[in-house]
Structures are given as structure tokens and as C-alpha cells.
Length: 350
Image (tube, rainbow, N blue to C red; front, side):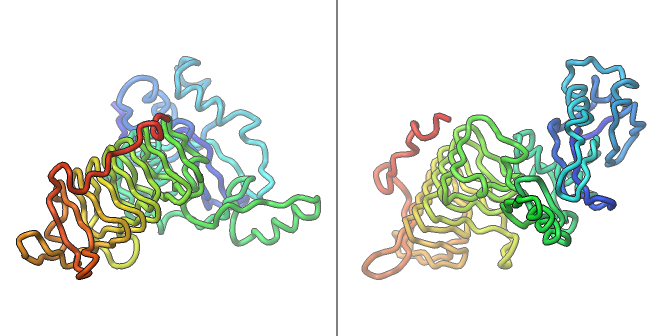
């Protein structure tokens, strides 16, 4: 029997007259596919094994024993409809595709594969690190993201002139390899004050609120209700009931030489304009304005001085700066020391 780790049915955008893929949106993106009608489309497309993407036509529905109300059939019907394939005013072409991924633990093979993995994380079928994304930056094209869809940076100036001649302007939201999540996936039970601040591939659990200065990178996010007013870097996961304060930062691994993937446990508070370069266990508090790197020297109650890296992942930790000596001091929270009261439930009833 044909099996695969993930299946996507969607619309790819490619540069007109080229094979270069700018993006692929999958209205149907599912992890797993070893039975039922999802396998029927694989048989029709003669997919046996490996990771591959196939063009779709309406003939696929006619040639496959798919019930009309099955999610796969509905997705194929939608992406092959005339309206979906109407030429875009952006020198691009829309191509209906089906993508099969054999092994999510192996690196992605092309742009279709990367986009499917990112959307599986954002629609919560996979958690951060649930799919290998190694090499994604080298695979994806740099794209001009506009209100008319993705555009090729190499021809964008000429495209803007074409629109200007008829009294139109393309609105550019970013120039990047990763688009904003909400143009592809809008998870239930969340709030995002500024959609530009959440990249595709972010994982936002129900009850999560991302405020205007919050930011969530791809392959990162929350595992429960959380307040995000600071930056969650690529690879970082934040536990249920935690608050990333305004302007706070959690170090990532994409640049700056960092190699350790950090995590924040449940019930933690990282104060405004604070930051961490170590992982936090559950119920930890970092004082506002205090940036704790792995090499920060921390004075413990017994007078011992240790590097913060030695405290990484410890539960119930309170870190603050002594306002007299300037030393960073660490305490074990005892129920009263460092009590921050937890999240405001009214702000997370999304």
C-alpha cells in the first residue's frame, strides 16, 4: 500500500515561463496518509514512493473514485476551478499541485516540500521541530510579497510600471523568503495584533495572544495559552501560561553563532525588555530589563557564583539584578518571592 508522511493539495505560484516556484498554498495539508481516499489520489497520480509534486487537473477527479464531499475531492475541485487559475497581474502563473512527502525527518527537497511542512506546523498538525527544515533558506526564493500575491524581485520594477500605466500600485508587505502566516493559515482561538509579526511556520496554540510588538518566527511558537509581546526566535517553544513581556527577547540559532535551541516552560514570566540565552523550566521569572546570556555570572543565595548556563532548564528560578551592587542574583521561588499572578484570563479567551 502507498504510504506517505504528509499530503498537500494546493496552488503553486511560479514565475511566468519559468520553473521557479515563488510559493505554494495548500488549502488541504495533512500529516499522515496511509488509508482511505487520500491514497486513491496517489494511485491516480501513480505516486509510489518518495517525495514528489504532481500537477493536478480536473481529470484527476474523474479518474479517481473520490466521493464529492471528501476533503481531498473538495480541495482538488477548488484548486482546479477556472477562477483559481485566472491569470494573475503579477507575471506569474498558478499551478494546481499535489505534494507527497515520504519522510518528514529528512530534509525538504524543494519549495513545495518546504511550504507544506511550514503549513503543517502552522495548522497545528505538527509541533515545532516536528519536521526537518534544514536547508530551507537555500531552497526558497526571495519574494516580493504584495496585495496581488507573490512577485519576482528581478522583474518587480517593470511590473510596478505596468500597474502605474493603468493607475494602480502594488502594495508591498515584505521582501523575504518566508511570508506571513495569516496569508496561508489562520488558526482558531488566537489573536494577532499585527499579522506581519508572525511568519509562516509559526505554531500558535489556542489562547495565544500576539500583541503589536510580539514576533514569532518559523518552527517556533507556543504550546498553550501565552502572551507574546516580545520575540520568539526560530526554534524556540514557549509553554502554557507563560508571558513574553514587551520588547523581551529569546535568543535563536539563525544568526549570531548560537547553537543551543532554547525553550521556556509553563507559567513563566520574561519581563519587559528582558532576554534569555538559556532555557527556562516551569514557573520561572526574569526581571524586567535583565538580559541573561549563557555566560552571565549569577550569584546564588549561598554566595556561590555560577554561569547562567548551569541553571538552564531549572524550575522555579527567579533572576534579577541587585540594584545596589549590580550583580545578577538568582533565587528559588518559594510561592511569594517573584509572584507575578499569571496570565489575565480575559485576554486569552479568544
